[in-house]
Length: 338
View 1: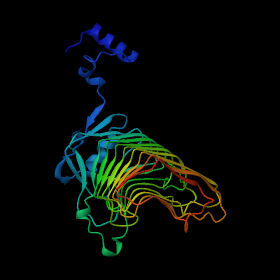
View 2: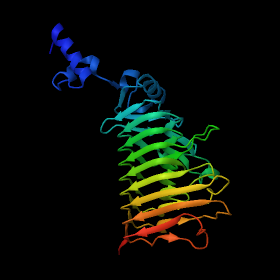
View 3: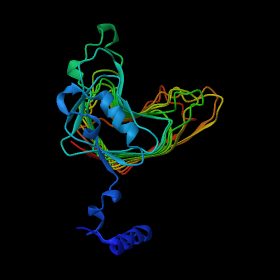
View 4: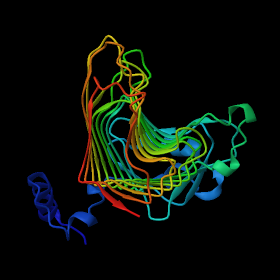
């Protein structure tokens, strides 16, 4: 449809007022804010190393929506999202690692940035192609998505398979400031066949995980669907909400391990899990352990509301290695299915 001068002025006014008719907006090229990754030379042919082209596309599309299509292959250096990145995968699109020999990688890094949206990512760590030296086989630091020190991040409908470590890893910034991630939302994530965890939360504030499905996690300790495990006293676990997660055939369904958290900074732990369904965990459906406060202040609450555990062992709050002066551990309305 061609617009005359008066119609064009009217369309601009309607855009400004937020009432542009749907029949007009899609036909205005200057109103389109999507960018196709192929524009930057991304082949998506299942063979070409697209990493450099993908990074160029990410850098050039900040403030717009970058659309990724095809079967992209990249090396283990991974790609980094920027503040303001919006990245969407077309149905069937994927990023898969090429042959590599390192247990350390991040397919997508979201480090020290703000206001990021990632939608529909399909990420394959190519576990079967990893030729890491035998002495490093027990290490599990190959991540699908790594979030560090970032704020206001939404990840929707991501699938991470065959990662050497975790599907998604959330932690403090690696800069000296050790800024905690804040406002992280992970919705409809699925992890399959990762060696260490489906998801790890090391530190963060206002983290919400909704409808995660983590299955067949195993290969190196602790092999949990979800592992909430601080690395030091600098980490925080504030307002962590996990809604309707499903764990299947993991060694541990959900693990909360607090051994490294006590220290000079007083800590208040706030973790609430609702509607957890576990199926066939080898060791525990839900385990809270490892805490010795050593006289430091670690308070708060770890709660699982309304879990259903199918052919699973009971929750495990280990009396021998969990300091009862620490956060209260509460399981309510448990349903066991044998």
